[in-house]
Image (cartoon, rainbow, N blue to C red; front, top):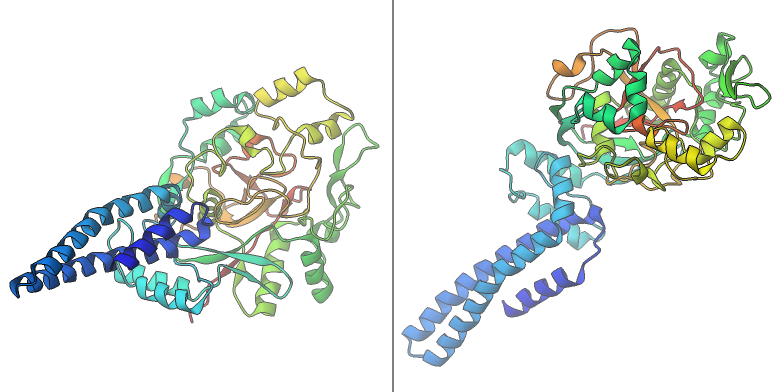
Length: 459
């Protein structure tokens, strides 16, 4: 009992930087050990009573004292353990609706222990049959998988969160003057108002989501395998791109498409200038090749994955400058490209105050290769920047007021589709976790691509 307890104390004290992905199963492992120690204390008291009853007072008293010390110290270790992981546990509980997510441990012994613990009560939440089955299914899933064309997919657990904006429109306008300025347009104001009312939503099934947006190289494999011609190439209208030789640095030309954007794109840059229909065609092909169901994320799935348990304006905090070194958004590099030269310090300060730029230079005026910045708590990259993504949903400005509580998938019909996520030319004011936009399915932009979701098979 004493050695078991001492080993447990040593583990708690010595693991100050456990990766957050390891927290759930480690927490359950330690809670299991604490319960084991508590049971052993009870057994020792019974043995001590038997010793005393048989006249062995000395040995009986030693057992009583030892068990009493452990009994007093056990709750202290329990509180220390909870305090040690309070931030991580909060994120996980928020992201999973009060249930801990058991990721696959590295060794077979730990896997067996975790499987056994998955049948026990979860932290501060009642255990139901559905929850037990969900956690058992998570045990069978790798936290990250790579498919045949090189797309890395991250396991996103089921859970609940608050969808939409918590700030009032007035507070948002005061925080970001550019929003107040743009809200003079009724159409723009309706888009901002579509972020509310905030409501509690459940994502009832775990899923795999692309760690990053689909890259140029991955989209090229689709085109080469199918001879697919994208809408901008097919309809002759082309797409938007960089035109430094004109007064307007960005314009639409027939020669612009996913292959040619006017700025340098590498194989590991996010593919852009694809329409919603192009994105759907890619998902259908990938589903056939992989024999798994691939699709675009829903509006709710995207925000749930973006927030990753947070309730702040961005996954990294509430201040626009929290995006520094975290995301590729509109910054000094972008505005110097737009204006064709260096910005003066006062201009940078004024533009930042408007909510139009991050006061930083990430050296990427356009797209960056995927995964160059920091991931969120789920391990997803570029959710607030680099390139936006199409979603499955039709768009309706008042949808949140009457959407489903479980797995909302948008209105049944519409004229525009939801677009989510910031991008390389996106103002920080519009890169928020709650920000969403409505684009015609045929729209093509040099900042708009796709991120895939793979549904879990029913095995």
